Length: 315
Image (cartoon, rainbow, N blue to C red; front, side, top):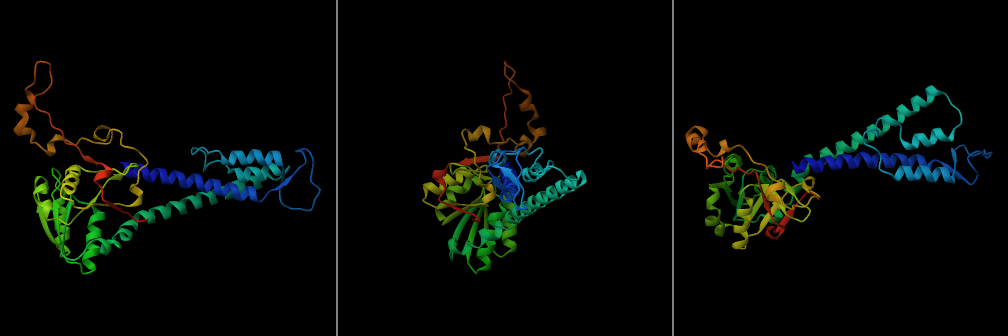
């Protein structure tokens, strides 16, 4: 799942940023002298003192990406600096200082990850706040499948007393559009369920297409439920805006070099055919051993950026 990969990248970035920030605080507390490492500082400054050469070496280490395997287990660089600046000390005190600083780093990382979780949880509300700016009175909206972001977006427009109608393409073969249609009706929104093959027939009556996606690629294209490219082509053919609503955590740094193959999954053929009814057909094969009947059930569709009219996100 591309969105999961995006979240993992954010978490790794948070860990590295917190470690670099923690290290920078330790470096700021050090004094720099021009003497060699063997000379002692007889000044009255109580702060740890290092030579410029040693400090520069530690600074280079701080800028180098740390190993994530030992980042939260080993002592931070700032602690190492403090230890290297002192020539003696209690071993128990050093162990306690290391444990204290490591716990603080872990606490900061966990707090930052908590902020990320809250950001993802509240993205629906931030996107929904923009609904009244895009959905106007007596509009007809088309969507495909089931998307929580789209659902909350339509709910928000309804709560602002907008009167509109929604066409929901059922999203075969999993028919998630049926569940979305039921949820919209429960909120008092006028809803019409249509088959996926009826999109071209109904698109001329639509003012706007609003859909959710699995991921937004680096080139502006989107990975969406299967059938979405057909909806986008129909919208372009009839000059209907194709609007994508998605949280910023779905922004992906990857490029779809071959989206039909590299970024797709094939679901079980049982979603399309009853094995008992078609078992005889599947047993027949050609002379080279390949079956005469093949079933393709892709999960995702790729919509190129030229077909997307607008992105609505939480940032």
